Amino acid sequence: MVAARYRTLIASIHDVSPRFESEIDRLLDRLRPHVGSRLALLVVPNHWGEAPLASGSPFASRLRNWAEEGMEIFLHGYFHRDETKHRSGPDRLRSRLMTAGEGEFLGLAADVAEQRIKAGRSLLEDITGKPITGFVAPAWLYGPGAMQALANCAIPLAEDHWRVWSPITGDQLARGPVITWASRSKMRTASSLAAANLLRRLPLRVMRIGVHPPDVTKPELLRSIERTFRVASRSREARGYSGLLQRRSELEEEADRGLARAPRAAVERPVA
Image 1 (tube, rainbow, N blue to C red):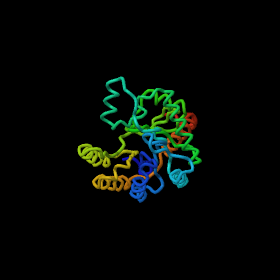
Image 2 (tube, rainbow, N blue to C red; image 1 turned 180 degrees about the vertical axis):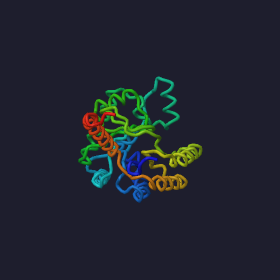
Image 3 (cartoon, rainbow, N blue to C red; image 1 turned 90 degrees about the vertical axis):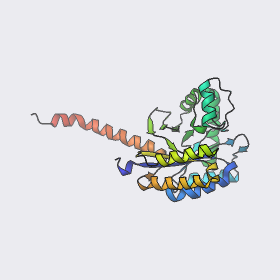
Image 4 (cartoon, rainbow, N blue to C red; image 1 turned 180 degrees about the horizontal axis):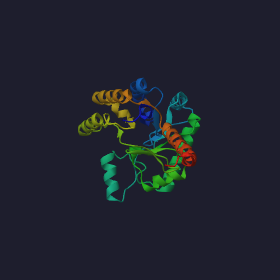
C-alpha cells in the first residue's frame, strides 16, 4: 500500500472555452466540494475556430480569477479540431476511433505545432498574468511534430491518456490511465461507465480524473463522476499537476542526501 501522503488525486476540466461556459460552471459546482481550487483547467483558445478567447472579455476575466484562486491553467491545443489529412492508416484509425475529429495535434508538422503552442501560451499568460502549467493535446493525441514542438517550447508538463511527463527533461512523472467519460453514443457512454467503475478502485499512486463539458448532458455520467470523486478522495490528497514536479524534486534531493552520506557510512562501518 502506498503511503497516504503520496497518494494523489488530480482533477481536470477539459475544453474550457467561452463556448461551454454554462457547462463549465456546472462541472465546477460538482468538483469543488471534492478538490476545492486544486483543479486544472484545460483551455482552448479558439474552439473549432468559432469561440475565440479574447483578452479583456468577461470569460477572460473569469479565467484570470480562477488562476488567482490557484487553479492550474493548461493550454489544450489551439482550435481542438483536427483538420489534417492523415497519410498513415494507424493515424487515420486513431483519429476516427478515439475522437470525433478533434485530435488537432496528431498530424501537425513541428513548425505548425510550435506556432500554435506559442500563440496559445502567449494569450493565456497575458490573460492570467501567470505562466501556463503545461500542455495537453486534444484527445490526448500527439504526433511526432507535436512532441518536437513541446520540447522546442520548453513546456514544463504534458499529459497523454497513460502518463504525465516533462518535455524539458523527458522524466516520467506519473503513470496510469486517466478516468474519463464519453457521451457521444450509448455504447461509448456504457463503456466509459464500466471503465470508471473499475479504474476508481485501482490502487494507483496518482489518480487522474478528467471531465468534459458534454458530461453534464447525461445524468448517469454525473452520478458516475460524483461516485468516482467520492471513492478517490477517501484515500488521496487532491493536488495539482505541478505537485508531481515538486515530488520529483523531493525524491532527487533525498537521493542526493543519500549519496552524500554513503561514503561516510562506508568509512564508519565496523569491520567484521
